[in-house]
Image 1 (cartoon, one colour):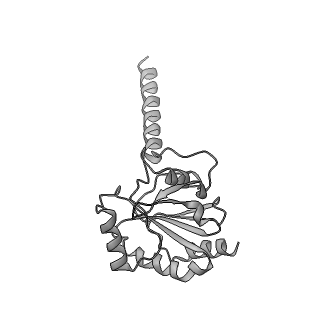
Image 2 (cartoon, one colour):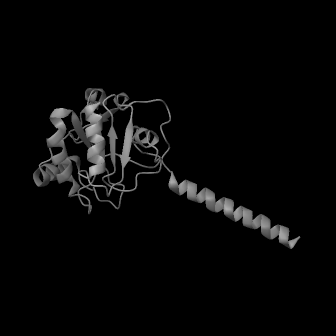
Image 3 (tube, helix red, strand yellow):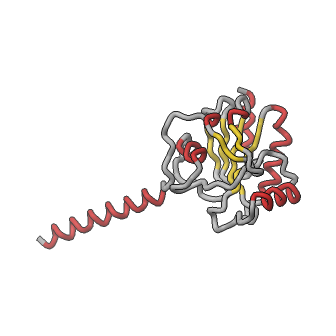
Length: 193
């Protein structure tokens, strides 16, 4: 009888550990409806509503950004990428997020001043959003759900590249630099389609 109790307790422990691991792996509810990037409306960094339908026909890179992060210098590479490919149809959308160790604490005005003065950012910037958890912006719920890697966004500067039709999404980790050959090849392929 004691062996049976130990086995049952062991199975319960394994099940609890697996449930905890799954919960920690994915805490953002996914937007599982059949959506497209162009179905979403967001608020730009100056407080104006912006339909992402305006980017129909463009290859879009969506990035959650932060001003006080070790990866913040990626702004420079993002701007260089934007300048190089914008005339071919690339647009980069920056979404400030303060969910990772409070590394984006400023107001929208402070964020805009920082990224334009320090990194000459000219690509579109948007109001602060949450990118993971219960309060994640619907756009981010859709982006995560539209990729093979459906785990929560791991850190600042996660990158999503969306095809011209707004349907296909590829995800790159925060530490993958915007000018990494793997990112550039996906952009160039999407621009050629």
